[in-house]
Image (tube, rainbow, N blue to C red; front, side, top):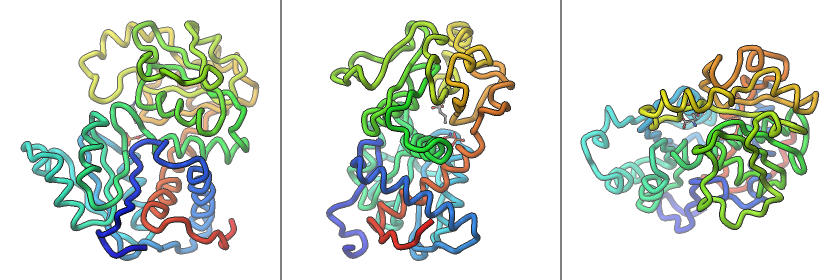
Length: 317
Ligand code: CP
Ligand code: NVA
């Protein structure tokens, strides 16, 4: 590893495809090892001298807690910034923030609006930058979701994942995962909220299929997943979306179309009675709490990889 802040080969995680397939599989495997140690109360502190800065320009519960707890567990320290309590909220350019923050910490996680803003930060950062959610992608969540699927059902290759909801940060990241890990994504959204042709140009049909009817999208699914009808940053569309998405609710009828052992996931926060019924999210097929917990384990493996590279896998699960 090169000396502090002079590493010319900084690795960022701005989208899932910033990892190679091999690296993605390594991080998932490593997450399981780190999780098993956590469950055994076995210390795992490879980042004892490192500092994580988190920058939140949107609200968060899981992302904040999972990164913060994860970094402390690995022996490091955490600094939390929001637009309200930093100069970002008073128009300091994101580039200047990146230059300054990255001289003092070892790794940065940002949750912001446009992907382009995250990329500008990364471009001016001396240290690895992690996407903690943008309008375009939510790669940390998909790391956790895939980890959860593998834990419960084994390899995701060749499986069917059904996405009920709009073309948003989650569904576009699922689409990247489908191409990397070779599974099929079924997607159903109301008209006007479907995938943007410009963003899916060139993606082979073997990786995804769009369905007008959400019931049809669930047929043969190994996993059904959904998200809030209105993502952060789009709140002014709340009322119109509430009407448009009324038939895109994951209920028992939809789950009945999926395979009998299909899992249900939701990145959370959830709105029971809107995108999902209480009977499904609180029902036997739901794995949402393990999914949320796995944010922490997956991100510990990710931070370890970005800062220390691949470690010997002599520590078996
Ligand atoms: N799923 C997720 O990213 O949750 P938070 O918005 O609470 O961080
Ligand atoms: N699509 C949602 C995910 C929240 C974790 C949003 O962007 O608000």
